[in-house]
Image (cartoon, rainbow, N blue to C red; front, top):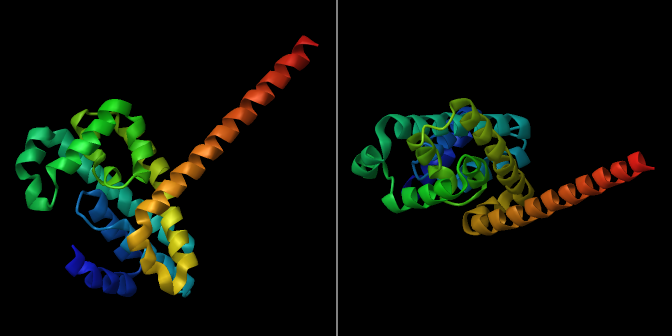
Length: 207
């Protein structure tokens, strides 16, 4: 897909939010379009004032959900055998599907949420969710909940980097790792705070 990068950038520059939605739909439909390219450049356009953060975020989420629903439908209707047989015609690598399948087998529906912030897995996790015929409404909720932080993060990073936004293409995985560490720390801190408040309330009731 590298030879198409310039075409993608020109598409985004010309069509803005529509292009972001279309390309993010493609990525989440398992076409290897790097979200760091799409959202990073969109972040740069926010930096220059050509787009708004909210508009780009909404476009990215709508497109991502549309692509995820398409992949879910393919998995749901066609099953693993269909994807293994015809997936290579659409640039879908069996090894990538295997990785997503292992995540889903281990974590179930929760993987739909957490994997949206992970390299490779986030693109293909909708397929095993479709294979397993998971609840459609829950799939939509988990997809949006998991996609929102990642989409916002890359847009913000592209906006902060400005003219150096292309750095995201080489450090995208590192950004993901940092994000996951920060998210884990926040979740642990919130859990500890919750436990302390619950303990304090129990002590007050006893007194």
